[in-house]
Image (spheres, rainbow, N blue to C red):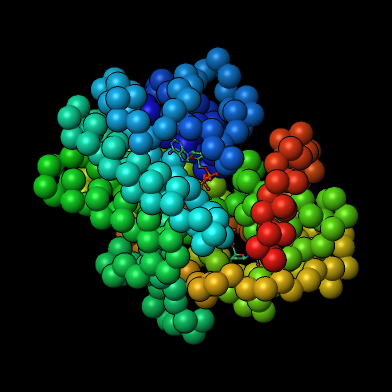
Length: 329
Ligand code: NAD
Ligand code: TDX
């Protein structure tokens, strides 16, 4: 199995999950180790996983690795919306050209390809909308990040239909859990507070996300690989919707801080208001259920992981906050 982006947050957790629950796979990770990739994430798997440092836009390398793989799971991407607003070029390159490069190798050599995408491709929902995103919702991306992921999804669909490659797509809601980069919402607040700083809420904090544990995402990806129908798309999400202000308040409570220990910072331009996935298809077709059905407990465990693993996130924090300082957030 070739795992692209396996030194990132979800890909790294996927590698650990695979070694634990699917030992039949021999795993090779392809990762460029961008600012978001971290070899340390794979340290617990050292010796059990082959690591190829390289770029998914490198056609020769990708061709060689795909040629010897039966299964390719594609996580590698530029993943942070704020960075995409500030500098979209690497998003277009890695997310669109990188996916294209992998698809062309799969077209030549075959193999079962799974493309990991996001609910952000559908745009956003009104706070009071009763209908959630489904697999049929038209694409309406808002940010350079989500537009580049949407472009990648369209390429995958076209390669299935035109060239008959054996691919599936999943669009998951927001993930949380261990090994998430400190630029992202939950780890940023937790580590700010651990270092004696304050939590930072964009705008008024009423934006809603559907928080899904990374291990539930990865269980779903494995189910799609083993039982999903080729050519199909599956939406993934816990169903647990909360606004950002509620999340900050819960983090403060779990960390024993006063409820007002946060500040409002300028909003993200074009900030999507709400994401929510209707997961009827993956639940009924594949029998997927989130195991982490208690968000408070999952968040408390995640905070515990950051408390215990400052060696992992400490070296990343200063640069991440310097980037936010430059953005005024
Ligand atoms: P991440 O930023 O933590 O990790 C991305 C990894 O990809 C890093 O290890 C990085 O080095 C690698 N990478 C980036 N560009 C590369 C390139 N050109 N060649 C090779 N490697 C490259 O991201 P994540 O949060 O783990 O997201 C993984 C995937 O899941 C992405 O495709 C993202 O769009 C999708 N996704 C993320 C979420 C979420 O909440 N984080 C939700 C739904 C979908
Ligand atoms: O300091 C912050 N304060 C804040 O209020 C940060 C970093 C974020 N926010 C808000 C913005 C969002 O409404 O929190 C929410 C979550 O922000 P992010 O962690 O940046 O996630 P989001 O923009 O929702 O995108 C995430 O989920 C979908 C991932 O980063 C994407 O890769 C994935 O596709």
